[in-house]
Length: 265
Image (cartoon, rainbow, N blue to C red; front, side, top):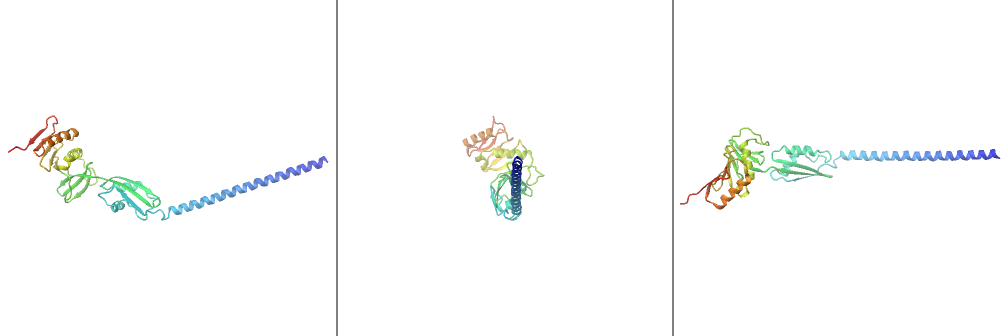
């Protein structure tokens, strides 16, 4: 009887072991099946993503240009190189910015993507502050002494002429490195608006001989563009007290400005 009981216990243990092995096998199979399904799903997503990435779905359909005044929207878009075949996902914002910054009138650029099909280009344009007359025409310059554009005429422009410069070599889109020009532009930029708006001619044969000529016929010997706030104050005081009477001011020595007035008849 003991022997029979032992055999039954062995059979029972073997059956339990067999059932355990079957359960483990089923779990392994299910795990493998889940991995296969996950892999297939992932493969489908990757395949779909690649197809979508290379499709025309993200092609640029709208380009919004902001900050431009001199250049038209069309000019900015053409300079950027973006077309209706350009993918919003593939384009390089850095390369677009570099292309636009090559243009003389563009000082700064920021490019933003707006999925799925819009591109925003923000530009900061250079602002001309003066005109330099040359033998063959005129050159517009900004407050950084950058040469913006050559012109045949100054018609329609209300900017002062900077004359008496001996500039011989420069390139449009590059900074004109010339001491008397830099001094003249610094002076012009720091002048108070009323006086700045009244200027017609700036003579800049040298730094020390910088002179300003107003539309009212006042000659101002300005000299070096230093202590501009103090010089502005002195000019404002003289011109406000003797409005219409002053014809000459020399403020190269601030402590002792020289003033000439119209002689009374």
